[in-house]
Amino acid sequence: DDQAKAKAKSILEQKKSGKLTHEQAKEELTKLGVKMPEKGKHGDMFANLDEQAKEKAKSILEQKKSGKLTHEQAKEELTKLGVKLPEKEKREDIFAGLDEATKTKAKAILDNEKKQLEELNVDLPHHKFFMKKEDK
Image (cartoon, rainbow, N blue to C red; front, side, top):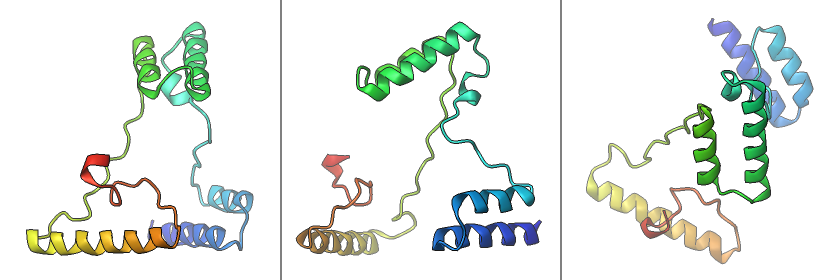
């Protein structure tokens, strides 16, 4: 319900601001009935696998982590084992719904801001909004 959502939002904001620790926020959210996803658990992906296949899948993930396998190779190997990989969230185009003239202006503003931040030695994340077409 809306009241629970508001409480949950408040708890998350308190965590973000530092008023609550991660554990305290998790505890409060659990009291509200919010189920927190467990970090680092691949149980859902491996749910339909037998023990031997689970071990192989974990080994593949370790090899990816250590650099022995690329992301694509690991993905291919896991798919062969029957692992259903979670879909990555599709990000919205921030320029969607703008006419061409406005889109061009907005991109020019972003490029200008990016240059100014680079002059200040600010490292920008490799986010698609900040990347040139040829870098994508």
